[in-house]
Amino acid sequence: MAAIDFSLLDVPRSAPIDDPEAYLRAAIAWHFGEDTGSAFWLRTAASLDFDPLTEVNTFADLRLFPNLLTELRTVPVEDLIPRGYGSPPPVPQIFESGGTTGAPKRTAQLPDWVAQVIEWQTEDFATGGFQQGKGFLCLMPSGPHGVGYFSRLVSERLGSAFHAIDIDPRWVKKIAARNAAGEVAAYLDHVLAQAVHVLQTQNVANLHATPPMLEAIARNDDLVDLVNAKIRYLLLSGAHVDADTLDLLRGIFGKTTITMAFGSTMILSQAVTRIDGDEFVFDPRTPYVVFWVIDPDTGQQVPYGELGQVVMNHISRGMFLPNNLERDMAIRMPGPMPEFSDSVSAVRPVATFEGEAVIEGVY
Image 1 (cartoon, rainbow, N blue to C red):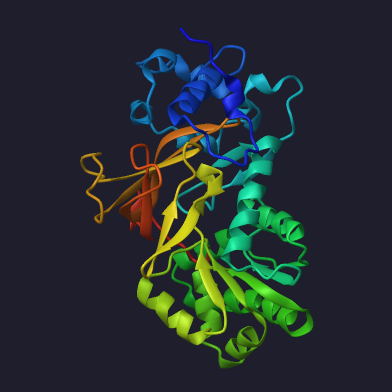
Image 2: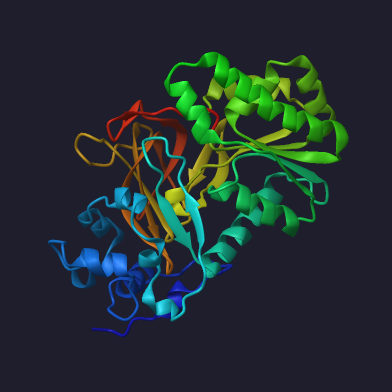
């Protein structure tokens, strides 16, 4: 067996990996090596009906793994850290999913991966139209969610003062689930009042919001005027927006560059956004992230241009999360590495997932 080059797993890295499958083999050797793997994966390996070290050689082979992400709701985060980081290991950043379909799932992001994500997002913001050196208002969750954490650090990198608000998306989902529309509206007003205070008193030109937040702003003429007077870069993420609504928002906020991001706690990052005609297309950062768009009934990839459910895979030195069937539907698109991964567009939630109704709320 050829020697494994673990340096392929080093991040941050400015240039892509030349040999994605060599990278994959190094990651498998790392996560399932007795001296380098995490307690979680070494324990899990004993229950698999295949040997990852010898049978996982291509990205297609990741389909051999069962979807184990539900275990991230309860597994101690210490068990997720690979032994190869040494003892004591670096202190991880713990981020949680939104809890849309039950208790949230946790990821442990180690300093090397955090540094990589900050580099990627700084580049994404800068190339997307972010007004460097001008204030940044972030109407996104913080707390256990990665989006607020990374946005703050990226804002600092770009020389912009960061303005945050308090938002608890899990509470909104709870009150939405019991059809308490008046309470949802009241909570939304509470969040928007915080945003208005920043917009009225501070020099901000950049805004990160969810589509439901921006739609609420669009229904208030005074808020529309305030945003149009100040904001020149507007990033939408965290919930889904259809093409017709996006066109309407572009017309209302005509002075502002509107772009979108697509990410997930379970891929520990976000995709690269590009525009194909009038559509936003999201390219995963392969080989670290691989998407497949499948027919959920057969498990087979749907033809390009057709709608299917998204399967996500994350492969890095710090974490390995394969074959995760997500709560997103999307159009399958060819991407930069079509032999390994799909790209996606027109992302939207499934109606139910893991036996629960999918409620996005404001995030």
